[in-house]
Length: 135
View (cartoon, rainbow, N blue to C red):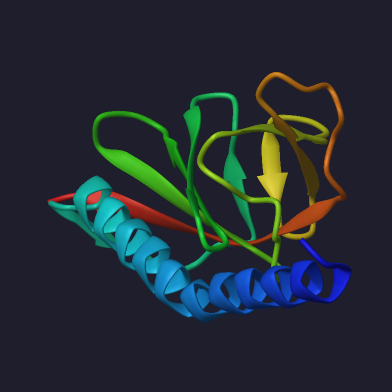
């Protein structure tokens, strides 16, 4: 194979991969929306809060798309949003929080570690925490 043909083939493969990216992104967003809807089915949202109690919660359940769920009890679930975009937030990641005391608050930082690796991501920050109570 000539070098020019190899470069053309590589460019064509790259263009093909880029062409499917919006479709894959749309599929991932639809899957995240469905998972979030299922997790919050039968719950009603309260007013967003700046902090949430962390000592009574289970989780996190990473949804992706800037959303993490924490279960406080059978009656309450907290939806935590990221302050800004957090490209490392994926369902299969291990979320490591930096917290002080028994609450997690807006702008508290966290990182993600890929399973099978010990290399942490960059920092992300929590935004608001919305309580969802069982109907």
